[in-house]
Length: 78
Image (cartoon, rainbow, N blue to C red):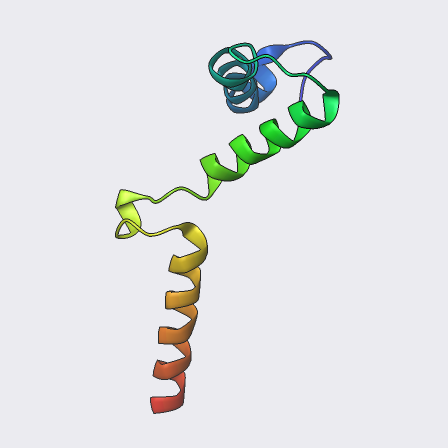
């Protein structure tokens, strides 16, 4: 880690929050702070739990559940 205020130290987070602000937050009117917080939380939740092509077009949670059940079956069979 470097110094305070140096964006290159955490470039992935900086990029994510810049996109979140530009593409989501600033494009809407937020009547209350609570609605803004819930909206941003929902956006983040959707982003990280979306379907991924690299794991068969399932969500990460579904993939982990499938993997765990397959691993348990293999372990029981052994």
